[in-house]
Image 1 (cartoon, rainbow over the protein chains, first blue to last red):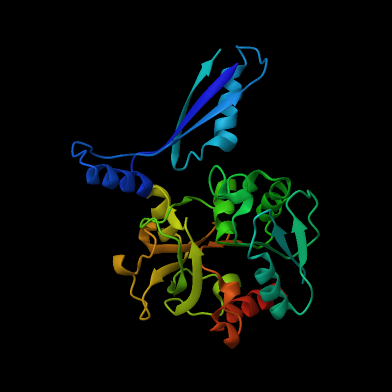
Image 2 (tube, helix red, strand yellow; image 1 turned 180 degrees about the vertical axis):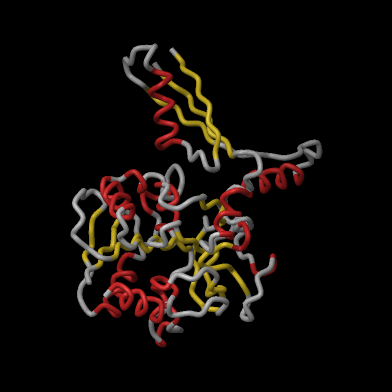
Length: 80
Length: 229
Protein backbone atom coordinates (compact mmCIF):
# COMPACT_ATOMS: atom_id res chain seq x y z
CA UNK A 1 0.00 0.00 0.00
CA UNK A 2 1.12 3.55 -0.70
CA UNK A 3 0.19 6.87 0.75
CA UNK A 4 0.33 10.28 -0.84
CA UNK A 5 0.64 13.08 1.70
CA UNK A 6 -0.08 16.66 0.62
CA UNK A 7 1.26 19.42 2.82
CA UNK A 8 0.25 23.06 2.46
CA UNK A 9 0.84 26.24 4.40
CA UNK A 10 -2.03 27.32 6.62
CA UNK A 11 -4.09 30.33 5.68
CA UNK A 12 -2.50 33.47 7.05
CA UNK A 13 1.03 32.07 6.89
CA UNK A 14 3.12 34.12 4.50
CA UNK A 15 4.24 32.13 1.45
CA UNK A 16 7.02 34.10 -0.27
CA UNK A 17 7.70 31.26 -2.72
CA UNK A 18 4.05 31.24 -3.76
CA UNK A 19 4.24 35.00 -4.24
CA UNK A 20 7.34 34.67 -6.41
CA UNK A 21 5.60 32.02 -8.53
CA UNK A 22 2.56 34.29 -8.95
CA UNK A 23 4.85 37.13 -9.97
CA UNK A 24 6.56 34.94 -12.57
CA UNK A 25 3.23 33.70 -13.95
CA UNK A 26 2.04 37.28 -14.31
CA UNK A 27 5.25 38.04 -16.16
CA UNK A 28 4.40 35.25 -18.61
CA UNK A 29 1.03 36.82 -19.28
CA UNK A 30 -1.16 34.62 -17.07
CA UNK A 31 -2.95 37.66 -15.73
CA UNK A 32 -5.89 35.73 -14.31
CA UNK A 33 -3.74 34.09 -11.65
CA UNK A 34 -4.50 35.37 -8.19
CA UNK A 35 -2.89 34.07 -5.04
CA UNK A 36 -0.46 31.14 -5.41
CA UNK A 37 0.36 28.83 -2.50
CA UNK A 38 3.19 26.32 -2.75
CA UNK A 39 3.09 23.04 -0.89
CA UNK A 40 4.71 19.64 -1.13
CA UNK A 41 3.71 16.10 -1.92
CA UNK A 42 5.34 13.13 -0.21
CA UNK A 43 4.72 9.60 -1.47
CA UNK A 44 5.28 6.76 0.95
CA UNK A 45 5.50 3.05 0.29
CA UNK A 46 3.96 1.46 3.36
CA UNK A 47 4.88 -2.12 2.50
CA UNK A 48 2.33 -4.78 3.41
CA UNK A 49 0.65 -2.86 6.22
CA UNK A 50 -2.94 -3.90 7.01
CA UNK A 51 -5.31 -1.49 5.28
CA UNK A 52 -7.15 -0.87 8.53
CA UNK A 53 -3.95 0.27 10.28
CA UNK A 54 -2.72 2.55 7.52
CA UNK A 55 -4.70 5.74 8.25
CA UNK A 56 -3.66 5.94 11.90
CA UNK A 57 -0.07 5.13 10.98
CA UNK A 58 0.16 7.84 8.32
CA UNK A 59 -1.59 10.30 10.63
CA UNK A 60 1.14 9.71 13.21
CA UNK A 61 3.87 10.22 10.61
CA UNK A 62 2.27 13.51 9.59
CA UNK A 63 2.02 14.92 13.10
CA UNK A 64 5.41 13.66 14.30
CA UNK A 65 7.54 14.59 11.31
CA UNK A 66 6.07 15.24 7.88
CA UNK A 67 4.10 18.38 8.72
CA UNK A 68 4.70 21.18 11.22
CA UNK A 69 1.16 21.85 12.38
CA UNK A 70 2.13 25.30 13.67
CA UNK A 71 2.34 26.47 10.07
CA UNK A 72 1.14 23.61 7.86
CA UNK A 73 -1.98 21.60 7.07
CA UNK A 74 -1.77 18.08 5.78
CA UNK A 75 -4.05 15.58 4.11
CA UNK A 76 -3.35 12.18 2.69
CA UNK A 77 -4.82 9.51 0.46
CA UNK A 78 -4.09 5.81 0.50
CA UNK A 79 -3.34 4.12 -2.81
CA UNK A 80 -3.39 0.40 -3.54
CA UNK B 1 30.61 24.96 34.92
CA UNK B 2 30.40 22.59 31.96
CA UNK B 3 28.90 23.17 28.51
CA UNK B 4 27.95 20.98 25.55
CA UNK B 5 27.56 21.89 21.90
CA UNK B 6 25.33 19.58 19.87
CA UNK B 7 26.70 18.70 16.45
CA UNK B 8 24.49 17.56 13.56
CA UNK B 9 25.52 16.58 10.06
CA UNK B 10 25.40 19.98 8.36
CA UNK B 11 26.06 22.09 11.46
CA UNK B 12 28.52 24.82 10.47
CA UNK B 13 28.63 27.12 13.49
CA UNK B 14 29.44 24.42 16.03
CA UNK B 15 33.14 25.33 16.13
CA UNK B 16 32.38 29.05 16.45
CA UNK B 17 30.02 28.25 19.31
CA UNK B 18 32.69 26.12 20.99
CA UNK B 19 35.30 28.90 20.67
CA UNK B 20 32.89 31.54 21.99
CA UNK B 21 31.89 29.46 25.00
CA UNK B 22 35.45 28.40 25.78
CA UNK B 23 36.74 31.97 25.53
CA UNK B 24 34.37 32.98 28.31
CA UNK B 25 34.46 29.72 30.22
CA UNK B 26 38.17 28.93 30.15
CA UNK B 27 37.59 25.16 29.91
CA UNK B 28 36.73 22.93 26.97
CA UNK B 29 33.12 22.42 25.90
CA UNK B 30 31.86 18.92 25.06
CA UNK B 31 31.01 18.35 21.41
CA UNK B 32 28.10 15.89 21.31
CA UNK B 33 27.21 14.06 18.11
CA UNK B 34 23.52 13.98 17.08
CA UNK B 35 23.40 10.20 16.99
CA UNK B 36 24.37 9.89 20.65
CA UNK B 37 21.63 9.52 23.17
CA UNK B 38 23.83 10.20 26.19
CA UNK B 39 24.45 13.80 27.10
CA UNK B 40 27.19 14.57 29.65
CA UNK B 41 26.13 16.29 32.86
CA UNK B 42 26.35 19.95 31.79
CA UNK B 43 25.14 23.38 32.93
CA UNK B 44 24.61 24.75 29.43
CA UNK B 45 23.54 23.17 26.15
CA UNK B 46 24.15 25.04 22.88
CA UNK B 47 22.37 24.08 19.66
CA UNK B 48 24.44 25.74 16.94
CA UNK B 49 23.68 27.18 13.52
CA UNK B 50 24.07 25.48 10.20
CA UNK B 51 21.99 23.42 7.83
CA UNK B 52 21.37 20.23 9.77
CA UNK B 53 20.42 17.36 7.45
CA UNK B 54 20.60 19.81 4.53
CA UNK B 55 17.40 21.52 5.69
CA UNK B 56 15.57 18.60 4.06
CA UNK B 57 11.79 18.47 4.63
CA UNK B 58 11.82 21.68 6.71
CA UNK B 59 14.76 23.40 8.36
CA UNK B 60 15.32 21.76 11.73
CA UNK B 61 12.65 19.07 11.27
CA UNK B 62 14.90 16.04 10.98
CA UNK B 63 17.42 17.26 13.57
CA UNK B 64 14.51 17.83 15.94
CA UNK B 65 13.81 14.11 15.84
CA UNK B 66 17.40 12.93 16.27
CA UNK B 67 18.29 10.79 19.32
CA UNK B 68 20.25 13.50 21.14
CA UNK B 69 17.40 15.98 20.89
CA UNK B 70 15.13 13.75 22.95
CA UNK B 71 17.68 14.10 25.74
CA UNK B 72 18.09 17.85 25.15
CA UNK B 73 14.33 18.35 25.41
CA UNK B 74 14.29 16.38 28.68
CA UNK B 75 17.17 18.39 30.17
CA UNK B 76 15.58 21.66 29.07
CA UNK B 77 12.31 20.64 30.72
CA UNK B 78 14.16 20.03 33.96
CA UNK B 79 15.71 23.50 33.82
CA UNK B 80 19.09 23.16 32.08
CA UNK B 81 19.79 26.39 30.15
CA UNK B 82 19.69 25.97 26.36
CA UNK B 83 21.08 28.48 23.85
CA UNK B 84 19.63 27.81 20.39
CA UNK B 85 21.14 29.93 17.61
CA UNK B 86 19.91 30.17 13.99
CA UNK B 87 19.42 26.56 12.86
CA UNK B 88 19.38 25.77 16.58
CA UNK B 89 16.38 28.12 16.96
CA UNK B 90 14.67 26.35 14.05
CA UNK B 91 15.35 22.99 15.68
CA UNK B 92 14.05 24.24 19.04
CA UNK B 93 10.74 25.33 17.51
CA UNK B 94 10.45 22.01 15.66
CA UNK B 95 10.75 20.11 18.94
CA UNK B 96 8.20 22.38 20.62
CA UNK B 97 10.78 23.65 23.14
CA UNK B 98 9.94 27.12 21.86
CA UNK B 99 6.66 28.26 20.28
CA UNK B 100 6.19 29.32 16.65
CA UNK B 101 8.16 28.46 13.53
CA UNK B 102 10.77 29.98 11.20
CA UNK B 103 9.63 30.51 7.63
CA UNK B 104 11.48 31.46 4.45
CA UNK B 105 12.60 35.12 4.55
CA UNK B 106 9.85 37.34 3.14
CA UNK B 107 12.18 38.73 0.45
CA UNK B 108 13.27 35.17 -0.52
CA UNK B 109 16.93 36.13 -0.07
CA UNK B 110 19.65 34.67 2.08
CA UNK B 111 20.58 37.55 4.41
CA UNK B 112 24.15 37.74 5.67
CA UNK B 113 25.11 40.92 7.50
CA UNK B 114 25.48 42.54 10.91
CA UNK B 115 22.16 43.81 12.26
CA UNK B 116 21.08 46.07 15.10
CA UNK B 117 18.89 44.40 17.69
CA UNK B 118 16.86 45.96 20.43
CA UNK B 119 17.11 44.08 23.72
CA UNK B 120 13.49 43.62 24.80
CA UNK B 121 12.66 41.13 27.54
CA UNK B 122 14.73 40.98 30.68
CA UNK B 123 16.48 37.70 31.40
CA UNK B 124 19.54 37.98 33.61
CA UNK B 125 21.02 34.73 32.35
CA UNK B 126 20.91 35.50 28.65
CA UNK B 127 20.77 39.28 28.35
CA UNK B 128 22.08 40.39 31.72
CA UNK B 129 25.03 42.08 30.03
CA UNK B 130 22.67 44.54 28.39
CA UNK B 131 19.99 46.95 29.58
CA UNK B 132 16.45 46.52 28.34
CA UNK B 133 16.02 48.84 25.35
CA UNK B 134 19.73 48.82 24.57
CA UNK B 135 20.88 48.15 20.99
CA UNK B 136 23.34 45.33 20.33
CA UNK B 137 24.90 44.27 17.07
CA UNK B 138 25.11 40.61 16.07
CA UNK B 139 25.51 39.10 12.59
CA UNK B 140 22.70 37.21 10.88
CA UNK B 141 23.17 34.58 8.16
CA UNK B 142 19.96 32.83 7.25
CA UNK B 143 17.42 32.03 4.57
CA UNK B 144 14.66 30.90 6.91
CA UNK B 145 14.56 33.40 9.75
CA UNK B 146 11.06 34.79 9.31
CA UNK B 147 9.54 34.19 12.73
CA UNK B 148 5.89 33.16 12.70
CA UNK B 149 3.51 32.56 15.57
CA UNK B 150 -0.27 32.83 15.66
CA UNK B 151 -1.91 35.92 17.17
CA UNK B 152 -2.56 34.29 20.51
CA UNK B 153 1.04 33.08 20.91
CA UNK B 154 2.38 36.44 19.81
CA UNK B 155 0.25 38.27 22.38
CA UNK B 156 1.47 35.89 25.07
CA UNK B 157 5.14 36.35 24.12
CA UNK B 158 4.80 40.12 24.14
CA UNK B 159 2.63 40.22 27.25
CA UNK B 160 4.86 38.00 29.34
CA UNK B 161 8.13 39.62 28.33
CA UNK B 162 9.31 36.53 26.42
CA UNK B 163 10.50 38.42 23.35
CA UNK B 164 14.27 38.63 23.72
CA UNK B 165 15.45 40.68 20.73
CA UNK B 166 13.82 42.63 17.90
CA UNK B 167 15.28 43.77 14.58
CA UNK B 168 15.78 47.52 15.00
CA UNK B 169 17.88 50.43 13.79
CA UNK B 170 20.94 51.86 15.55
CA UNK B 171 18.68 54.03 17.71
CA UNK B 172 16.55 51.11 18.82
CA UNK B 173 13.59 52.07 16.63
CA UNK B 174 11.63 48.96 15.64
CA UNK B 175 9.72 49.37 12.36
CA UNK B 176 8.82 47.63 9.11
CA UNK B 177 11.91 49.25 7.60
CA UNK B 178 14.16 47.42 10.08
CA UNK B 179 12.36 44.10 9.72
CA UNK B 180 14.97 42.33 7.61
CA UNK B 181 13.15 39.04 7.07
CA UNK B 182 9.42 39.55 7.61
CA UNK B 183 9.31 38.22 11.18
CA UNK B 184 6.09 38.94 13.04
CA UNK B 185 6.59 41.95 15.35
CA UNK B 186 10.25 42.11 14.19
CA UNK B 187 11.05 39.19 16.51
CA UNK B 188 14.67 38.00 16.32
CA UNK B 189 14.72 35.88 19.47
CA UNK B 190 12.46 34.54 22.21
CA UNK B 191 12.57 32.88 25.62
CA UNK B 192 10.46 29.98 26.80
CA UNK B 193 8.10 30.60 29.70
CA UNK B 194 10.53 29.24 32.30
CA UNK B 195 13.26 31.53 30.94
CA UNK B 196 15.91 28.80 30.58
CA UNK B 197 15.80 28.57 26.78
CA UNK B 198 16.80 31.35 24.38
CA UNK B 199 16.26 30.87 20.66
CA UNK B 200 17.55 33.57 18.31
CA UNK B 201 18.40 33.89 14.63
CA UNK B 202 21.40 36.27 15.04
CA UNK B 203 24.81 34.84 15.93
CA UNK B 204 26.36 36.26 19.13
CA UNK B 205 29.18 33.69 18.76
CA UNK B 206 30.41 35.46 15.62
CA UNK B 207 31.28 38.77 17.27
CA UNK B 208 33.51 37.86 20.18
CA UNK B 209 36.63 39.93 19.52
CA UNK B 210 37.64 43.22 17.95
CA UNK B 211 39.47 41.24 15.25
CA UNK B 212 36.09 39.82 14.20
CA UNK B 213 34.48 43.25 14.15
CA UNK B 214 32.92 43.57 17.58
CA UNK B 215 32.56 42.29 21.10
CA UNK B 216 28.83 42.37 21.81
CA UNK B 217 28.87 38.59 21.50
CA UNK B 218 31.71 38.32 24.02
CA UNK B 219 29.69 40.39 26.51
CA UNK B 220 26.77 38.04 25.90
CA UNK B 221 28.84 34.88 26.58
CA UNK B 222 30.76 36.38 29.52
CA UNK B 223 27.46 37.20 31.20
CA UNK B 224 26.00 33.79 30.38
CA UNK B 225 29.00 31.96 31.87
CA UNK B 226 29.08 34.21 34.95
CA UNK B 227 25.39 33.71 35.59
CA UNK B 228 25.84 29.92 35.52
CA UNK B 229 28.94 29.81 37.68
